[in-house]
Image 1 (cartoon, rainbow, N blue to C red):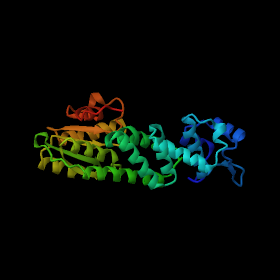
Image 2 (cartoon, helix red, strand yellow):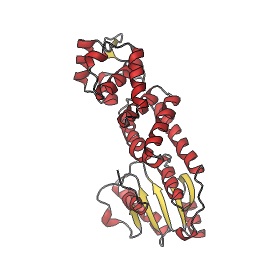
Image 3 (cartoon, rainbow, N blue to C red):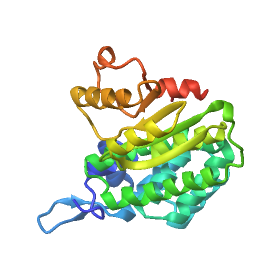
Image 4 (cartoon, helix red, strand yellow):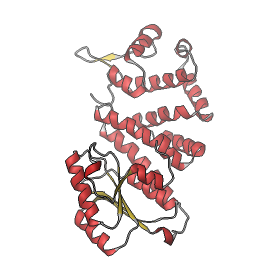
Amino acid sequence: MAAEMYSIKDLENLSGIKAHTIRIWEKRYGVIQPGRTDTNIRYYTNEDLRKLLNISMLAQHGFKISLISQMRDEEISQKIADLSIAKQVDTYGESLLLSLINLDEQLFNKTFLDIVLAEGFENAIIKQIFPFFNRIGIMWQIGTINPAQEHFISHLIRNKIVVAIERINRTPDPALGNVLLFLPENELHEIGLLFYNYLLRARGYKTIYLGQSVPHESLDRIVTACKFEFIVTNLTNPLSAEDFISFCQRVCDTAAATKVYFTGPVPENTDQSLPSNALFKKDLLLKLHIKEC
């Protein structure tokens, strides 16, 4: 189904409002009205989704649906703006979602700034952006949003992290040593790795950031040429336990004298088969004094 035509199940996934509740709101209050295709299939538009998200946000803050249904669109928008000004944390997810659905860069920038002012940059990413990414990842997999929308929001978030890295005004501490960060071959999603780069630099580490899809031969050469305190890599592509163990052993053999942190989802039943210098996300977060969310 195209991004401009949503099923009621899509609305449920995007808004968190149960389908039967949406139907009740339709029939009893007329808040949204579905269209119908030539084959008589019900569908909803971006405008329906936007209105439902706004109604959901107001309902979460104590407004009765009977009252919301009598408001003009301008009144609803003003109430939402008032909530945003008050910086109610639980409105952030809905605002981020609206910016994704509408490809609204201005709304995203405003929402992100509100989160950073309220929680600081690190917590903004850890507590709001990463959970939001998990949410849209599920929606992308089931086809509720399209790849263009996911690319749009990923690009904006990536830029925020890059700018934050560039603004770090701290001389690296030689006592901490150098840290190498890379994504293995065929890994292109670098937002997680970029954020680790930010965390490390903010704590005084000197980082060597190689980025996306690094051939193993290139990794071998740089590890041979330079000494690193530890190495960080990040996996988003799903791997079987067997493939993960093979990848892990190959990297750890290449950097046999160096700890290697493997972040991202790790297949189950692999711990007993991994090299002694292999560590994981929880170990890295502990090292950086960050509580795992």
